[in-house]
Every structure is written in C-alpha cells, then in structure tokens.
Length: 163
Image (tube, rainbow, N blue to C red; front, side, top):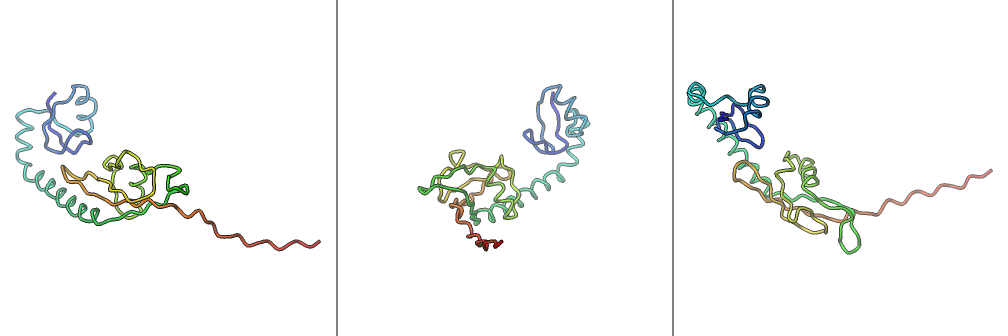
C-alpha cells in the first residue's frame, strides 16, 4: 500500500515521504497513530501545500546536525575501564558505553547511530568512533580508553579496643 508519512517514523522515513508498506502495517500501526495517510489525490494536494513547511523543518535538522558535527569532531571522550597490566580490558567498550559517556558530556546520541571500530574496543588507547547524524552527515569522536585507577585510598587503621 502506498502512503504519505505524516510524521517522522523511525526506520521508515520522514514527514512528507511517499513509501510503499504492507497493508497490515499501514492499517494497524501507521493510520491509527496518525503517522501516515493513504496516497491519493486529496492527500497529495494537502502535502503540496505543506511542502515549504516540511522543507524548512528538514533544513533546520541539517543545520542542527552540522553544528553538532563541529562540536563532536572536536570532542575527546575519556572512558575509564578496568584493565590488566598489559592494557587488555576486563570488559569491552561498546556503542552503549560510548553513548553513556557522551550523555555525561551533554550530548544525547542514540547508541544505534554510534559505530565503534570492530564492534567493541578491548584494549586501552585512543580510537576514532563514527557517529551517524542526519542524512549522510557523520562526525568522528576521539575516544580514549584508560585503565581506571585500581588504587583505593588506604583505610584508616582502627585503634585496638581495650577491655
């Protein structure tokens, strides 16, 4: 079934896009949630009148992703992880770990948009992680994986109890 998207739908498309989807998906998911309208002369005419508004939204998203790209390209994220003496991590740094570190730095990025080289990082060092932004724009963040300090502060010795 041919539909016109009325809103951005994850993994399908953006507002104003014409897509061909399964009949059940359109009837049971898209139409009840007002995410899409059936493709016909009336809806095509309606979206033609809204074309400028939709293009303005897309231009705003492009500008936002360009400014975010500049900030992310200059960013270096330090992730402390427990590691052995040879620099091999006891765990692994994944896209979820990078997303959490970016969130602490004030950048909300979906973990699915983060591409870690080799799927995981298993050694300490510096790595270039790619983040897919809007459309074809990508940013490269430098991730520095360090051995977290395993040294704990020495505990104060307790005084012997006299009886």
